[in-house]
Length: 328
Image (cartoon, rainbow, N blue to C red; front, side):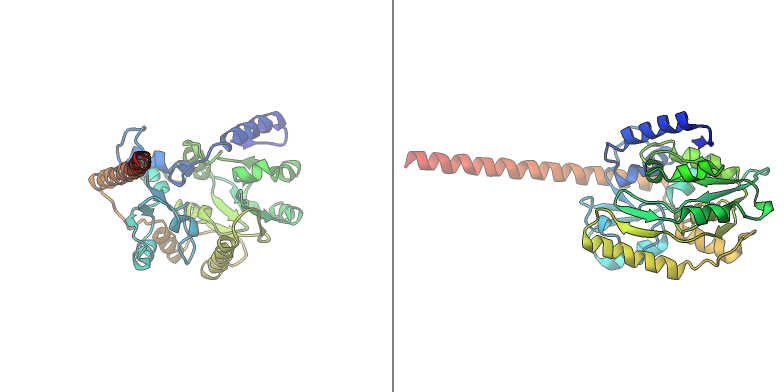
């Protein structure tokens, strides 16, 4: 969705929709349209359940995220050779399946590329999450965006739905910028809106490295690191999880060191690195994915059956003991 300075009523309606969708818990594999993409790409019915855990976008951590380690689901989908190796070395007992990032599969199926007449730039605002609040000096950031080189054209500000709900968009609309939000991450249309916007832009910018960096560069947009990085504060994570997140942020800044300045072309080394993190070199045939889904469904069914059997045995034991006490 695109919003201009005069779209106050449209923004209010959009925010109410986000709030409604935010009331429901979304499994990791269904966020950002991942589940819908996998069903479509591998030819599964839209109603097919996918009882598996997957990585959240492009996982830039050095260690396995706690939420993935603690997941009850046995089948784990990862999106790069680096993460296949890391998971298998960790000996977690999970069944690790490697395949390309779902956004790449979406692009391949739709045969998407940057539009020949792409123009202007998109700035990806470093986003918050429900449990992690990013604080950015918006006044300083706006001043810098107002002074980007002329050949970068009009700058669109792309914002995560969490920051839309926090009202972060207001300062940019007031300053005359247009704001874009692909919607709530539970919306299967998220990826459609994202690539429709990205394909029309010539340059990408941000004040942080995230999944947007990889998707933009892979799509052919030179990426510029501008503005001040946000300062994040804990808004609900357990202390051990927050410590792991801080280590991840340090790792990201060390590994993906981007020089400040305006970049006008994608280098071969940069593109090679980006494609590696997106799993462009991985291939999972259709029949193998169907087998993975069947295996995950059988594991889930056996777990449910085993749990019910345990409850039945406990109840039977209770009845036997109760009867034994009565007979005595």
